[in-house]
Amino acid sequence: MNQTKEQENIRIYISINGDLLADALVRSMMNYRHHGDINTLFHSVYVSYCVLKMCRALHVEQTREIVRAALLHDFYLYEWYTEKHEQNHIWYHPGQSVINVEKYIGSLSDKQKNMILSHMFPLTKTMPDNIGAWLLTIADKYCASQDYLSISSRFNSVYDEIVKRTQSNDD
Image (cartoon, rainbow, N blue to C red; front, side, top):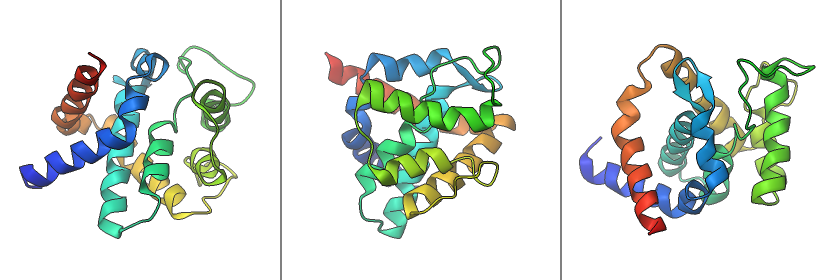
């Protein structure tokens, strides 16, 4: 991808998710390990950035609503490697993420709830029922695979730019 288009994607991404990325609780996601050495915030930014690029390529309406939900899809706020629940993390964390978003961030639309609850499909029973949910499900599988293969580091420069610009907006 050319540098100009990447900078435009970063600018749009920050205009959509900058306020969320400035939130201390959202930032705390960097304290939770997700896939191997990848933290939950990095993974969630990576996934939601991929969703943004897919939305733009497909000219999807409601891109803002979709990309914001994509960032929050793993907003479960616990260390899943050590903190155990009655259900396995795979099935437990989507519901916990919805609870946490609505408790700490604000209400989700039905579309956003379905996106978060179904992002582990087909491992979960909740099936994606909208384009945003399908894009999130696909992006999550793609990014998780890259996380586990230790090749998601190619996203580092974009992630660093997003974090840098978001933090500079706090000042």
